[in-house]
Length: 100
Image (cartoon, rainbow, N blue to C red; front, top):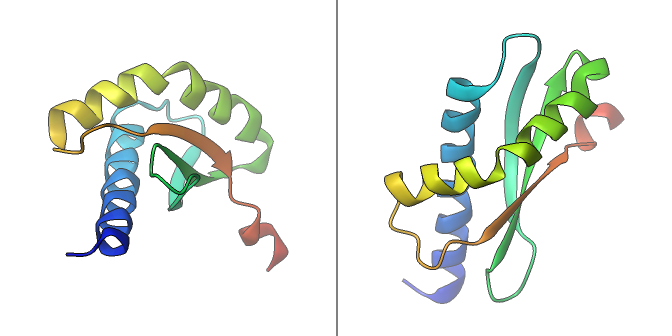
């Protein structure tokens, strides 16, 4: 497996685990859906996870929740994956869905 394939597989794993983490930890006031994950740096030490939130009025509180629980998500990744070193994960709203 080459480096590009490895990076793509790592971002897929992070997106999948982010969805599992959010499903188990988020409050039911809003629906937070992981749309995709993308590497934010060439060396793979940062990953951006894009999420959509319904209703849209809950986007800001949902992102605040995800930022507050970033360390817990890192612990979740450590426990369920073999990614080493773990990248720093940032959560951003997916604005592509609003353009449609």
